[in-house]
Length: 488
Image (cartoon, rainbow, N blue to C red):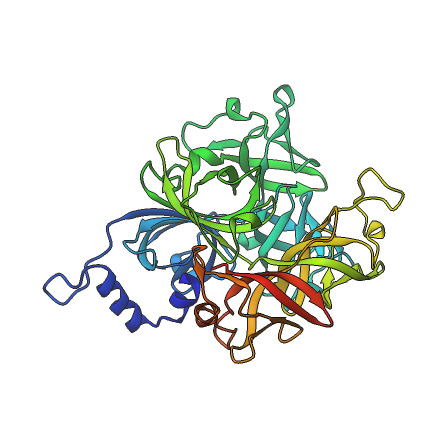
């Protein structure tokens, strides 16, 4: 996988890879620079810049940032837009980079008891998790009301901001700043609303970039305002029309384009949906990493690699699930409402404030969004989500009409081919794979059990285990498999 490979490359190894993938040297011993244009948007990792799986050399890049930061100051968790060149999708050169935080200002409130934990700033609800990077802070516990911070992140379909970086800032680090979609435009009063609660007064503000004007303040248009926030009133000194600023990073037809974010507007695969404002189209040829096409759903975080068509739709060659998709399907054996934990196949499943519950009331008929209507020993559910450390966090729990096959999709953590066993969750779930079961590889081609086991690698210190999906019957602590397939 690109992320793991490129992260481990040292400078010398990277040069060798660039030489090998770029067609060798130019006859003088130097590696010729890449020439294939690429645009990319998402959360970066430092080194120089690793974005959506590609390691970009950024030392010579032109950086746009209202705080005047340079390429050397790019850091983990920042959300950036990049235009550069890469011939192989592994290494490349960045030509232009735009640093795009979502909000800068003082914290209005903090909720440490919610799951996930959160705080509010400029009317925007900010969620934090185990992937949030803290800068100049020891962690969530160090946040305080009235503290001034800058937040980078990605928004889900509900408009909640999932923070990728939270950094404490001072008055010297730029004015207050808020990004969002315009609503409730009152041109006669020089006002509009952001994030549902913040009234922006733009009387006397300048519009950017060149050619931008007040007439462009239409409902739904994304803007970035700079100025001073006081309570729920934002006195703007500058209003940036984002789609006009983003032109260099939008890409061109037939160019490679990568985007990271949460899915919204999903209905069916193959089909179209949005990721971080970019329309994406999946096809029968789209490859999936960390999950399968059946795992596509709204508010699932993905990275999409592909090529822009003539209408600037990103035709996906690959969809990578940012968190490996985990599935448990079977009879619920216990439900603990205070902790919001239910048990499937002996494994605890943790629900939180974001989990979508689709159940039926015990009285029959209708629809329920409460775990109280999931009955232990009676109801079977399909739970889908991701791992946070050793905890399976459910993003959706759906009650099934009837109990059919038990299903597990997860990374393998152990295998014993001689005994025909696979284990998951560090041994917390064991599966027995008889010779008579049906086996498939990642392309859905039928294989023997011996070939299947040869394709499976358990998790190690530097790698995730192979993602597999098993169907069968769970009893006495073991899943006896009837069908087994490789998912990546």
